[in-house]
Amino acid sequence: MYKRQDLITQVFSNPKSLFITSGFLLVLLPSGLPIPVLLSLAAVCAGAGWLLKKSQEEQARRKALEARERAKKAPKDVKEEMLSLDPLEIEVGYGLIPIVEGGRGGSLPERIGSIRQKIAAQLGFVVPPVRIRDNMQLKPNQYLVKLRGVEIARWELNPDLFLAMSPGEGAQPIKGKETREPAFGLTAWWISEEEVPRAEALGYTVVDPTSVMATHLAELIRRHAAELLTREEVNSLLENLKQRSAAVVNEVVPDLLKLGQIQKVLQNLLREGVSIRDLETIMEALADWAPRTKDPEILTEYVRHSLSRAICSKYLDNEGKLHAVTLDPNVEEYIANAIERTDRGSYLALSPEVSQKLLESTLEKLKSLAQEGRPPVVVCSPQIRSQLRKLLAAHVPDVAVLSLSEIPPETPVEVAGNVTVNV
Image (cartoon, rainbow, N blue to C red; front, side, top):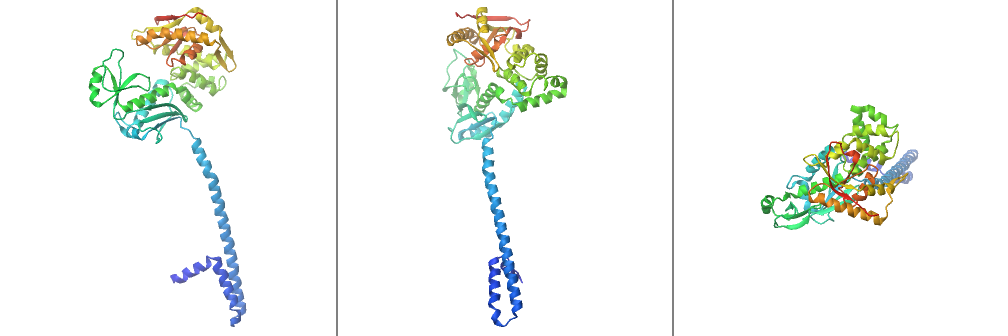
């Protein structure tokens, strides 16, 4: 029974078999068998073969068409995947894979999670996830950090050693290989685990390799926070603010300012390390001043004035005193007269010679603050603050330029030097 069904299946699933059967029936016509029956059977087999052949051809065409469609879609899928960029990405050499999975100080993903939480609390927005990849083209102990697909930092770790950072001038030497700490450029040494107790006793700050990479990443995120703040994130922040203070958000967006204009103001603040966590105060300042100007730079200065106490508090010593460098009134006036405003923003129209003199004089005055272990702070008038900061930041990235309006009246200021330039 099985063999008969198998034979029937083979015959009626193959048009060639049906055509052969039809020809065989025609050959039997002279045999004496009933001719009408043979002709009828031959016609049925031939017709069935023709229909089956057409059906199989149509099915083959349909499969070929589906294959072509899949072929068309495949490059598109690959192209879209290639075009997709991660906001933040770390690539590591194969020698650092144990650190990623869980070395001294915990696994790197766990540390990154803590970094994102800490920065969210400090700067006021959620840092996007960080993708970690291995890259066989890197040196075994090397890693690099990418921002939207572009490399922004590269360094080499020693996963079996600890990094000891010098406590300053006059520190006793330790056994190790001299290097530079990647986040802040501090003088440091790679030391063995046996040397750690002695280094700590001498005042060195000793950290494990995972902490070195995590600290480097955290500092890079802070420096590039403005580039990580997208319109989508700004919209999310405003939606959260609406839940507790809908009036101020509705007053500003969209009647006074567009989402992109608010984004630029927030980016300006983050670019100088100012937290945007107090978004309600920021939006209230924008509600007050946006009817008068839409210039993001000017609006940023008004917002900074509203956040003055929080901005200034970062640079006070334990006694609540601000140590800073000031500018000679003649220098301030010269800079103010050199500011050019256009539809695309403002810029400082100083000659290269004057810019260099101003820069050198300011850096010289800031040395006294650095020698005392204090942050680099310059105080000037509100009119020139943003332009002066742009000039100085190219050479001193962490410099803080505060306007007089950003210093609370009760805050004492100790002048560490006065910048003078012969122009």
